[in-house]
Image (cartoon, rainbow, N blue to C red):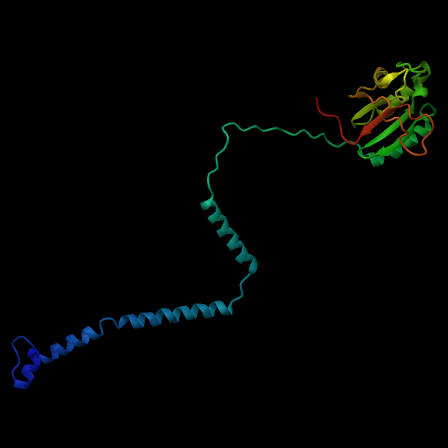
Length: 250
């Protein structure tokens, strides 16, 4: 039994103690954590208030998405790992030739030019993917199997040089011979087609053409006429090939 209660019964209180002091001490002990109840209620009330505000507002989707992307980018940059890089980096530049004159526009112009000049009227113009080709029968430019242009072909060579002089396109000359026979042989057909292509290319350069030009020989591998309905004799021919790109820079 405490001294206070014993004092109450006996009517005598122990020295240094009082009834009111003991009651205050008991009350302070019982209500020492009562402020936490009030603080919890306040936090719950504030949370309810902000939820209410959010429920009454409208979220702009694009702003939310921008926020998500920005946060994701920051997190990715933080989590990104440093990858090992080679000590020497090799950079290989790709050289793509620039486009030149539009062949869809150029092809009808060349056809009209050939039909208007008697020297070029024996040529045939035909369109293929990525190029326009002017085909001349070999017999119109060469005598027999000769690899040198005939004197009668000089007006044709000059007219061709003047026709392609103004073009900025890549131009090649392709020679095509008859299929290899027992007398000519495969090597002979290839040499003959290449010699004719070179002779025509050199002839056009001599009379004024100053652009780059490549001569190629295909022998009898492409002896068939370039188009159905072409003029007879075009199997053995020389082609002026005009590509849709410009020549490579030197």
